[in-house]
Length: 316
Image 1 (cartoon, helix red, strand yellow):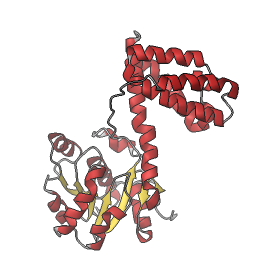
Image 2 (image 1 turned 180 degrees about the vertical axis):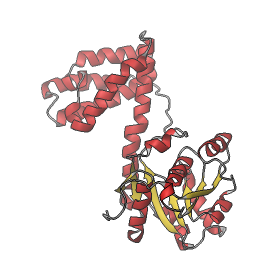
Image 3 (image 1 turned 90 degrees about the vertical axis):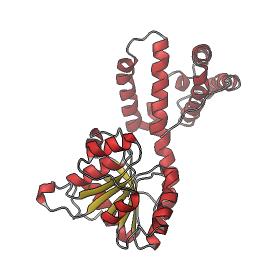
Image 4 (image 1 turned 90 degrees about the horizontal axis):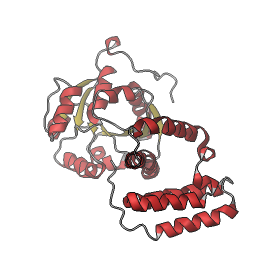
């Protein structure tokens, strides 16, 4: 990174606003990023949103910024944030380019983790400057998101000649740029979804089971445990593994599966799949003794064969 790029966002009072900013898609991400850019001295001028929730978010985080159609956002802004769901992004870019909404020299930024800048090719052909800036953060749609951007990593993909501009925008929002190659974006996004989205599912299931077991405050019980587990995992990786799977306690795992089958059959498949993945990693790192692994893997195979329906879980 260029050593002259500031490490901290500059106070808006220290300089005039430099870019007009527009947001297409007032979901949880766009208004928070625009509000953060406003703190850095840029000027939000337009936002688009359809749902009542989008309108409320825009009003809360970007007060006095007019709500207009997407084409009007592009007409007013020098820097445009496309913050729509991944599957909607290609069609949106194509539509904006085909209607002539994209202007030469305009910065077009999307926040999808899945895509790099190739998805912005229609805008590039219209003369726009394409950037992919994905904040590796979960968003609430409230002002707390702006604070959480401080120190947040962003997956950055951009043409080489725009790399410094992309990194500077991230730093102005308080984030830390992490360069992701175009071809690595899907794997990068899968890794984040595996860790963050599935964590929510696991924690929610764990709290439900604790309530069924009679625990009055499962959040208070899990908070210290999960905080320590996360800290240990980030510090030590697989060396942080504990519990009956890593120890090879096949009888305990069999009892778990039996209880889940009786009280929460929808959780059995997830438990078995994660236990198998844990066993594989524990074996590979010499933590699970091979002589204990055979019985354990047999229990998991039996559990996998009797799980039945698993339902579905939608992830953001």
